[in-house]
Length: 384
Image (tube, rainbow, N blue to C red; front, side, top):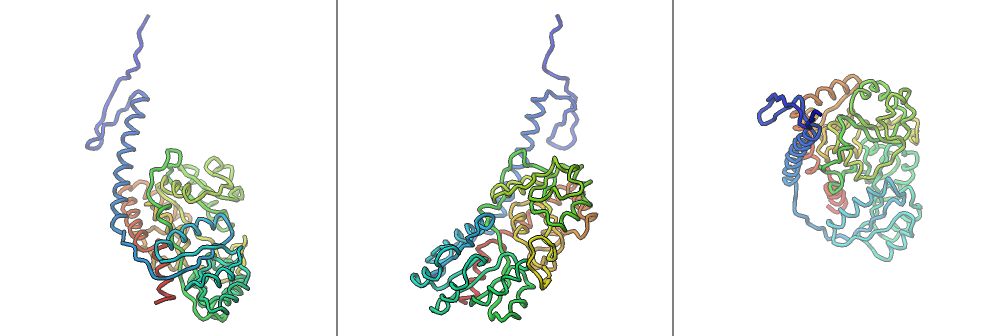
């Protein structure tokens, strides 16, 4: 009888200082070494991210304001934005009252007499409420979250408020031309308690990912990069991706018709080496109430959420991007399917450059693009 041993013959090659690579190892030893290297690498990276975040922390100073916040009343996916804004405001003003668009808002406002009523989105709120509040001498403001895609509706809503804030710069003139007197450009931000560097599970670790809805313009673009994504450890998550002509080719990499909450989205961003950001086209046929054909040049909230996770972002080009990030230093842009795949391939092979850009984006985002910073701007605009 011949005795067998579990110990395999080892042949080692030293490729980098401090790392021993074995050509033949027992699977347990392979797993142990891989886990050790991966854990050390992520721990070091996580420490770098936390050091960057610590540099952006400022002491909280509350404004002596009583604010009534009116949540959308729409539920998911708007509810996480409401939650982020409510939690942020609670640390910024001396008194915060909260209701939603399905309640008797004007009655609540007349009872509480706040310094400001701030309405998010406002499409669920009966217009009798802002009219009654203004008639009672209560200052009102609305913050539109989906411009320019619902401007056929919002153009009628905006006139009923004292102050109008829009996340799309091209809509400022649009609302002014419709008779609004106080209109301001204010993009949404991100909530750092949710979108921040994390330790993602092994199953979420990918080379490239995209999270979002398969609008037709996106389908056209992703159809051209499907061969590339097929060869990569990639992930696409969202609704309607079975519209892809090459759906079967990518089916194993697609989480079809999945709506992820902020925590799972943040983990997905953290797990990817590169996250693709593609803005919604202003003239896409799906759920678009933009008969004025107002172009979209401003950034979506996803831009800040991705960067807040400390992940390299490949974003399509928007005219307004330079106001928020330095292209090539804090964000990487693309203008065609070919350019996206070329840049993705480059940064997958140049890890130090990829991580350097991601760290600079993390710092810029934590410093300038949180909901706290946006709401500071909003309150200063109204109260001086």
